[in-house]
Length: 154
Image (cartoon, rainbow, N blue to C red):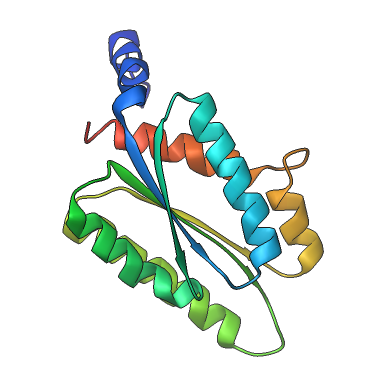
């Protein structure tokens, strides 16, 4: 679905008033910090001035934090970031699926866009490819998605 030009221009003008929350787990913190920095930089490039960062222990804590943030009604969108690297057990699948389902439930129940910015990768090399600004720069994509979805609420 392509938006017409008047809607797109309206969205651009609203960016300065949008409020975006970002949640970042401390687990895999070095990779997460790079993802966060690129997300913040893109939000600023898009004209977002009101950005609040929240930290949680791990990816499984993202849905609870997102729920509390959504209930505050202070933000137009939430970006849930994280990096989960597959290990030798089923834990990887459980963490990613549970976080995804929990965040989707909060999105729909609280009428708040939550961008699923959790990178679920096989190894550290894949994570680096996705977080680095000069490579895939997923943080940039997550920021763009948040701004686009936030305009549905603004």
